[in-house]
Structures are given as C-alpha cells and as structure tokens.
Image 1 (cartoon, helix red, strand yellow):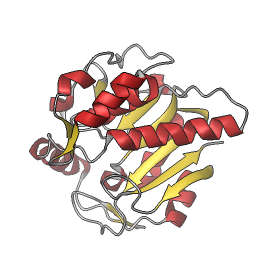
Image 2 (image 1 turned 120 degrees about the vertical axis):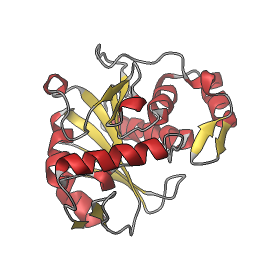
Image 3 (image 1 turned 90 degrees about the vertical axis):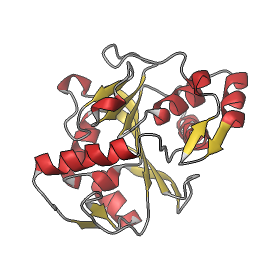
Image 4 (image 1 turned 30 degrees about the vertical axis):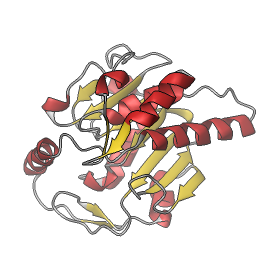
Length: 231
C-alpha cells in the first residue's frame, strides 16, 4: 500500500468537497453489487447457523447517496421492487436510475437508528439527506459505537490517514459484523486519492477478521471487492 499526506487536513477536506461537487451525479456502484453483497453476507450467516437478517448498514463516502438506496432495496425491498430497480438502472456517468423516484421511498433517518436502518456518510454538505449524515468518514459520531452490522465503502482510497480511518470504522461495527470494501486496484497515491496500490495482503493487515469473499475487479465498475467478517 502506498500512502502520502499531500497537504494539511483543511486543504485536503476542501479538495475532497470540490471533487465531490464536480462529480455529484456519479455513482460507481450498481444495484447488482448491492444484491450480490447482501447475498454473500446472508449465505455466510446461514453457514454459521445465524439468522439471515442483514442490518443496520452504513455506507461511507456516498456522494449522491445512491449506494444507500441500493443497499436498502437489495436488503429489504420486495421482489417486484428489486426487479424494477434492476431494469431501470443504466450506466451513464456511473450507475443511475432512469426513474430515480422509484428508489426514494422508505429512506431511514440517520438520527433514529434502528435494526432496519441504512444510512450514509458524506463530507460534502450538498449530499445531505434524511438518511445521509454530513461529516468525515474518519470522525463518525461517538453515539454510533457498535451500531452497524455492515459497513460499505468504495472510497477508501480517499482516506487521509488509513489506519485511523479503519479504526474508526471498526468502532461503529457490531461484533461479527461485515466490512464490504470496493477498491480500484493499481491506483497510485495522489492528492485526491492519498491511498494507493492496496493489495489483498494490505486489506488483511489493516482490517483483520476473516475474508469471506474476494473478487479481483469483481464489481460492476471493475473495482476489486473484499468482504470481511469482523471478530
């Protein structure tokens, strides 16, 4: 793994917000990814003799928040709704729905966490929603300690300090929870992406736990996917 602190924290956050604003319509996450990851976690829980339920879920660095909608519908939506969302999805500047209103009903409130909550975190204030908390994903609220069964991100390459960031994510997870990480393999460290060239060995070292799923370039955006079960 390569990591370089290119600039002071305030400048880093300003750069991240600027990049988020310029790409606010982009989502490099497909509903099919959410369905696959929920299926993998349910299968793993079944193998351990645990209930198949998944949640609550936390998505980090969500920009326009579509990951939150995708996980919520993949986990809890009816068969017909899941099928409709899948059919309506198109690939244009990332993934988006031809009819976004279909994905909106049923959103959680980040201030009222429950067993069915699916919420997001986004540094950019324009990403604020009832289910998206505005703030840094390496400074999550203390009240979220031990609250989430699944933590997902495809924005680990943006971490200012990777070890501290991972420690923060682990703090908000329930025992036996799951980290789902999508990462652009081979990417070098740069001012907008301080963390580069993360390997499977780096993921094992940083996160610990048990690797239950790995697919090189396996996401719909060809990011490598890692799913780890925490102790």
